[in-house]
Length: 300
Ligand SMILES: Nc1ncnc2c1ncn2[C@@H]1O[C@H](COP(=O)(O)OP(=O)(O)OP(=O)(O)O)[C@@H](O)[C@H]1O
Image (cartoon, rainbow, N blue to C red; front, side, top):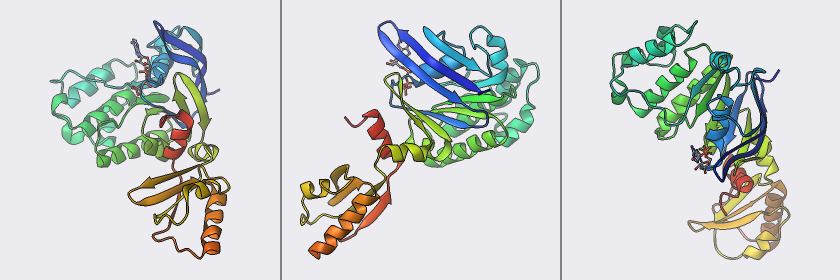
């Protein structure tokens, strides 16, 4: 049985369709990403999974249970860290952990959790005095305190510096390695590419693609890009006419040609035929960023 199933989920706020037929399945043990631009419907979708919102139509199941009708059981199975979570500013880390542990019948040992999440030295610190990274670690601890089988982590690393973000990624991996399924909401491509086994790209309330990170990149068809110092000897139209060529941009005096392996081969042959040396030539693999722009139309 899948850990989480969402089938044709619809949810509107008045006229605004936040989820417009969202469908995906999360298997046990996965880190499954929901990636999409602001307002795409990501939070609405995971709130329905957590049973915090009632869908207008469609089916949601967590370990086979309806999260609205069987809310108490689902709360035991599913830990939730929602976007913009906040705690009472004067609460200390220890008090928050103890309080949340008291909500569960069989909580995890909060001291072990604090140790695992690097919070042991912060136990006496008030929530308001924690750094952004420490606050996020505390929220992960609170999401895990009921020993859940799955966790929802929504916009976990927003506002964190690159170092804290990387530390948080390592934590998410260790959560998965401990056997907990992770549903991760993000709008950071790098985060999704680095962490997720599979990703659903959501745009305007719909899943526009669902695949592994590598699959999404391949599907977007922009597998490679080649860049060089522009000297205008090869025209833009000529570059775009190469097989598989998807785009030509100029960035900081460099021409960037995006396409497939075939585009790169044809470009190199073109240089050879012309006897032209492209200075500062670089060939790079396209990232999920390129695929994402393609899949969401976010650059339009
Ligand atoms: N409680 C609400 N009342 C009215 N409209 C809402 C409410 N919550 C969300 N919306 C709207 O529904 C749409 C989807 O919002 P949602 O928060 O699900 O998107 P999101 O993908 O999580 O966005 P973000 O990345 O900005 O958090 C947006 O247009 C948002 O303004």
